[in-house]
Length: 154
Image 1 (cartoon, rainbow, N blue to C red):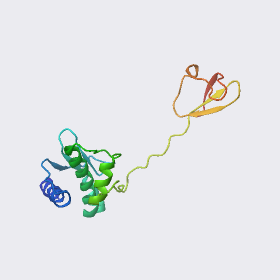
Image 2: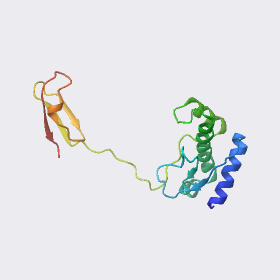
Image 3: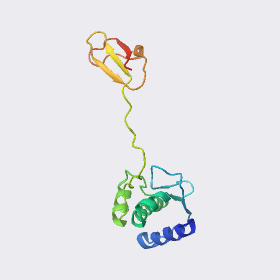
Image 4: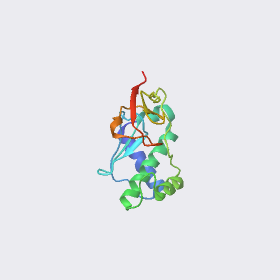
């Protein structure tokens, strides 16, 4: 599928599901890695991840297109277009769009970083584990307001 076919597909879904024409540009963007698509607030264009089409098929991409069209139509109508807005959630449910896209095979799952530093209260021996280094002079113990010392765990 090329960009012209995608444009026609998005325009068709817009008329069929929303009853309003899509008057901007829809494109494939192969650089998208963690998202199925995105809507641009300034240019009103939509980008779709072509890897979703290759891996999950037409039905999944149609749900992604409906999701992005919900952002598009609500934004142009001046209503709540963000994920947290009630208008967005209601319209998405009404048209049958997906809230989240499926993950792509081979996508790396972020593993949590280990704790590298330990802050220790000199008064009550309360321990605080941290991933980032902090200046112990700027902080006090939350339990007794005592002074803290820092040690590296690795």
